[in-house]
Length: 211
Image 1 (tube, helix red, strand yellow):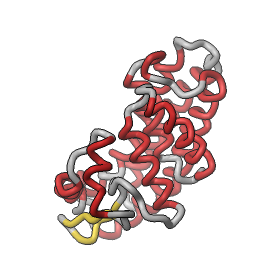
Image 2: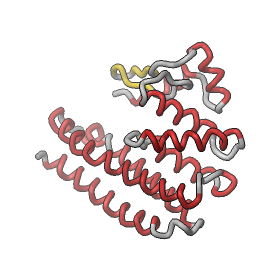
Image 3: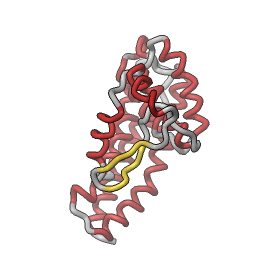
Image 4: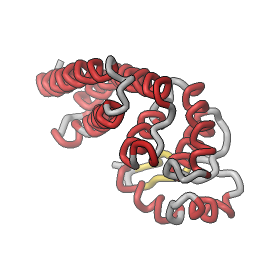
């Protein structure tokens, strides 16, 4: 194995191990309402660390072989980290329900949504969260964009057209396109209703992630 790849993966494993130890201790105290924002913050951090770490081949200038090896090893860990975060979120929801804006503030609401959004390995759970977010959106107790993104994520994952155009893929460097959208002529109106900007602007932003 390439020494650079081995070092990068070892760093990631060490980071994840330390985070899981801390999160496990917090989960053990999940009945305490004061623990919820802290725990959700740590789940958000490990979720984002995983996704930022996927850019290591670009940042370190890995060659093609190193890049493929790194991606294989990271993917083996990806599902495990997302599963761990999902399990912790389920325990939060079982103890307290959704962390609403009124009860916990906007950051915990956002952090919980991020974990649910990335729980692609558990579509049943994502659908359960979507059912929670619908009424809470109407009540102003969650960011309406959360419902939109998760609706699209579930729809695309189940092979159905999305509504808001949030889910897409890179077609080539510098070119991103949304997956199939129901009633595409009405997409910008639906996006406006949940606080999202025009689809054309979103596409322009997302293309920057296509390298």
